[in-house]
Structures are given as structure tokens and as C-alpha cells.
Length: 282
Image (cartoon, rainbow, N blue to C red):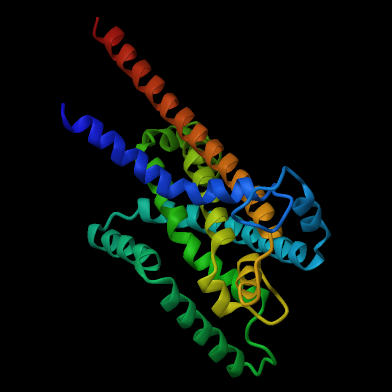
């Protein structure tokens, strides 16, 4: 009982350290001046300046294009890979596939970035390409590190799914492919959506791997901000960071709502099964 006040204080302290920098950034994005110590008055000046900066908006457009493309491709590939791993009957092969899936997450980003860069340069020189790095190399790199996260979101949903559902659909005349899209996909859809959102946020946030695999003609927002730090970061970046923060917050809320609805659906299905069994035994 004596530890409760101390535990609460520790929790509050951790939350302050985590969210105080974000709170300061949000507040000073509305500041009239460039100062980070004195709030001189509320203004939308830096938001207007942000939307006049064509270079920054171009970097945002590139980042969104890359994140959307990488998240869609990795979600499709990750869902297919999760289904394949789930249907493996060999225990040792399945353990091997699980271990291989975890490698990109455990591996440091700088090692992944350098190894991918070396591979792209080697393949580019092998085929005599003028430039080895471009948007496509960044896209392949982003899909590579997003894939494991999608697989790990979809696999638990497959394990929770009633295995008799696709079999019942095939008994009623569905082909295996039709049963997959009509029965299995709706059951694992919350995991697919969560994987999609996670892949999107990871791709949007990535700097290290993007830095090593980016070409000269394609610049993402994290790379642009890094280049700006060599001179000075203007409050326009605070305004942009505020917008991105709220977009990611909305996506996370949607993801949590999707998980909550999925859990509620599973609970209702279990209750119905119990009631059906009770009626059958009477």
C-alpha cells in the first residue's frame, strides 16, 4: 500500500519525460516569433509559411508516396507470408521461418541500411545502370523492414480464427481461393489493418535506412529535416511535426478501435458457442 504513491509519482514522471518535448513542440508551433523560450503570442504564421515552402511540401509528398506504396505492398506480401507460415505442418520449418522473420526487426537499422545499399550498388553495376539508388531502391528497402511487422500482426489473428470456417466454406462449394477471400480475410482483417497502419507509420518515420538507400533525385522528409539541422530548423518544422503527430494519433486510435471491435466479436462468438453447446446437451 505504501508503494502506490511512489508508483504513481514514477508513472507521472515517465509520462512527463515522454510527452513534455512533444507538448513544447505543439505549443511553440503557434508562436509568433522563432523563440523556443518565450511564447510571444498565438499565431498561424508558421503554418502559412509551411504551405508556401515548395521544397518541404515536395519532401512530404515523396514521404507519403513512399509510405503508402511500401505499406500496401508489405501488407499484401506479409498477409500472404503469414498464411503460408500458419499452414506449415513441419514444426522445425515453421520455427525457422519465425526466426528469419524476426531478423529484420532485431538487426540494427544502420546494418540493414548499409547492407541494402551495398546490394543495390552491386546489382546496379552488374547490369551497368547509371545510378544504382533511386525511389525503387528505397521502396524495396522499406518493404523489407515493414514485412515482419505485418506478419506478426496477422499471424495471431490466424491462430485465433476457427479452423473449421474455411473447410465449411469449401464444403459448401467455394474454391480454396474463394474461401480465403470470403471467409478468412474477414476474420483476420483487424490484424491486416493493424499491420497496414504499423507499416505506414514505420515507413513514414524511417531515416537511417532511407538515408543509405536514397538516390539524389528523391528526398524524404526525415532526410530533408536532417539536412536542415546543418544550418537551422525553422518553426515551420514544428508546424509540420504537429500535423504529423495528430495524423499518427488518429491512425493509432483507429487501430485500437479495430482491435477492440475484433476482441468483442471473438467474445460474442465464444458466448454463442457456449450457449449452443448448453442447448445441445439439454
